[in-house]
Length: 207
Image (cartoon, rainbow, N blue to C red):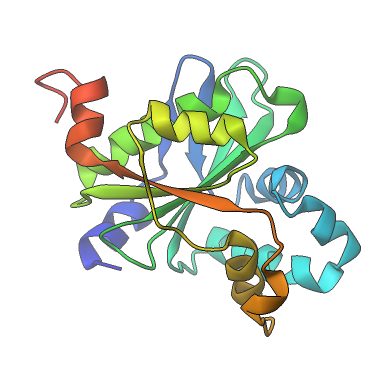
């Protein structure tokens, strides 16, 4: 990651306010809420319940991040503005600093309220305003029509992507033979380009 971005994140107890939700940078004050929300909202929630070892990896990374041990990700808790309850999470993976990848999920009971789109939109605005990022990558399971619609609404265009199941297993430190996961749910990848996003959502003074 670039020093500029590290300085920005490390010195900023970030809170982004939307009409319905607040996007808060993960820290020690909200880590327990984040863990609970993440485990239940993630696309791998059922796997986490069945395979405690699989849950240990993201759980440890989240706790380390809250303690100030930054990795390649920027992690944010999404809370409902009225109740201040955790309703989901959104992360940006900066393994490729020029094209961070989005991971977002909303708890089942809060879906259909526009929270995911609002959180994604205000975070994209923040990134494009404060970082030298020209493109944000959005991965989704093809069967997740809601996620695909949000990516398209943000101006995302479909490109060749990767297998999210295989990538998640590898990230957890497990040995994976991609051929064994050929029947895994199909995924789709979108690229959200800065200028397209700006033209769609920002006025002339936005940037």
